[in-house]
Image (cartoon, rainbow, N blue to C red):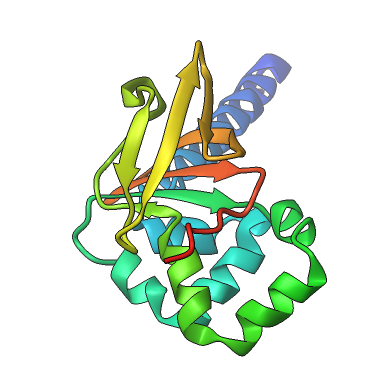
Length: 168
């Protein structure tokens, strides 16, 4: 008995549908779950300079801890804007570098919607001024470029400047 041509076409269409659905399901299965603040930084190419400095100072381990943490993370462009002499001084003084980096961390979870004009205590012990006007958020003289990158132990906000703690 001869099978009609539409039957072959229909089976081909069904096979294509099954393959497409399997592909969609596989794509859904590869959606990443939130990871720690440190791992969030490591996964973002625009934060590779910060990631290298966090690793060099040992702060990665702290930012993988229980938290919660809010990291105001300077982008690679923010680090490029820092004068060469300042970067050389930081590279030559690991304790100073650690103090600068820990000034970017607040030991609580602050989503952009939760930020109010105030001072916040940073991980290095100094206070930093945070402000919000509408949806525009700043910390000291740096503006938040990308807000609310949620991690399992806090949140990351990328910023357009490197914060320097007040001199003691």
